[in-house]
Amino acid sequence: MSKLTPPLPKFLRPAPPRPGEDNGAGHNGDAAPSRGEKLREDATEKTAQVVGWLDERSNLSPLLRANLYRKVPKGTNWFYTLGSATLFAFVSQAVTGVFLAMYYEPDTARAYESAAYITNEVFLGELVRGMHKWGSTVMIILIFLHLARTFLFGAYKYPREIQWIIGVVLLVLTLAMGLTGYLLPFDQRSFWATTVAVNLNASAPIIGPYLADFMRGGAEFGAASLSRFYALHMLLIPGLIAALIGAHLYLVAKLGTTAPPWLKPEKKSLNSEGI
Picture 1 (cartoon, one colour):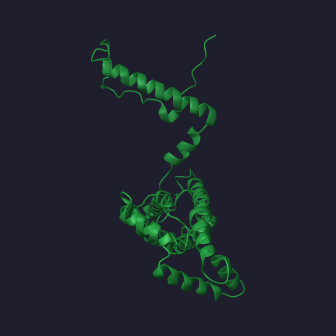
Picture 2 (cartoon, one colour):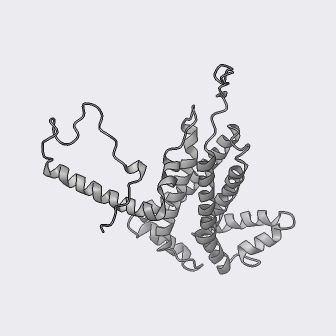
Picture 3 (cartoon, helix red, strand yellow):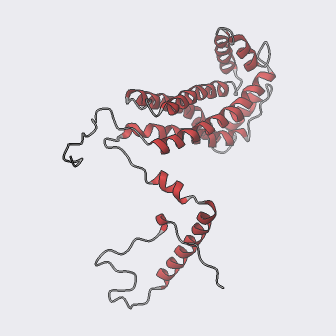
């Protein structure tokens, strides 16, 4: 008994030919396909079989259709790309951060030398470090603009309150990401700027002193502080940001996007309702 080939997902099934189009068999429908067409057909069939095999076992086609074929409200403009731009900035920070971590040494005696080595000696190191440095500023600006657009468009209201809360938490984590990364070169400017920032946090009521001691790893800045900031910057905060971005995207796909506030909803007439 021959094994049945799993059916193709709907979004991979070829569209039927339009009237008057050549269907790959010549004008009369009896010409043999060329060698190039035959190779393309074989490659398409094998690719479809692999995708069908994966879809049969993972059932990803409904998820892909839900994300790729979503309804977009009228009046959507460039303001709606701020969220995607912020996501792209985070991905850029993650990729460049991985390459920088390959050469950086989180040690008080070697941190500055390793940062200088990346800038002056590593191939394209100055470019990658510059992308990471200025990319953090760009990401903070973009997430501020994205939250401002959400607030001005009223997209934080029911039923999207959880999305708004996640966005605010992401803003705080992004600022924490910038603070923890600023100390890593461990030069005079980054050392004293971080000292001032931590002292400002220490002035907060009740939890301020405990938070400052946790960030410093003790009463003063030292080797424990640099290791702690490096661990927060490379592991804890990026993991939280990635998890919250996943939850945020899930809610966006589930609830959709809101129309601009200047577009009024269309009122149905009595005739349209059949009354």
